Length: 284
Ligand code: GLN
Image (cartoon, rainbow, N blue to C red; front, top):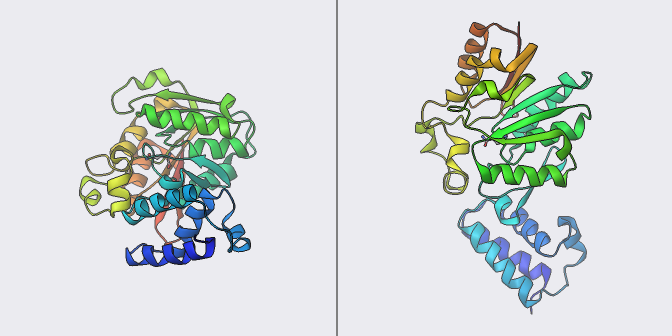
């Protein structure tokens, strides 16, 4: 028989040996998920024995984590901007940097009534759902090339009770007819912005487990920004705005494309590491 405390200690050692960072935290989050409790509640039940099924489950989680599968895929959920989302290997795991994008949009649009957004590359639905949860008059169209991602975004929008204000559509932004999408007050995108070259150097958590089409454009990283900006006059209403998340070193290029197209009031926001991560602008 093995108790919660013993299991945590043994598994922390194991994950440490396998080179997993924050081994103790990983161990706690996985065990809390299995025991269906909050992480800190584990501390009130150190003496609780694990039954055979729990132990087997835990062993399975640990071996997956030791092989570098991201924790979020193992436990199947993530917290983003204070909302809970399901995730699986068909979508990118929402990142804390993307919360900056959502925060900026909420700040800028809180006062506006009835605006309509287009979310290009919805993934798990994180961005759209966080906006809809915080701005009750908003509604949007969210597109993705992946049917599996759309199914998950649909599930997440239902779990968060915003499904009546979001339409989900399978759409290939680089190939399909842009005009058919309609007009919007803002376009939001955290597109696949890793270049083909940088993709090769990503760590295994990303490269082996996260969907490649969500990460890279298989080219120079700028494909989606370019296409979205080119199509912006077709997609945007008067004084429409664009909000992008950017990869490291892309801000100058994207900024230039926006200016050339006639965008003004351009704002750039740095992330926690000082990287220019969010850019937005308004079409004259
Ligand atoms: N919109 C999702 C996110 O921001 C998915 C983005 C993507 O797959 N490139 O996490």
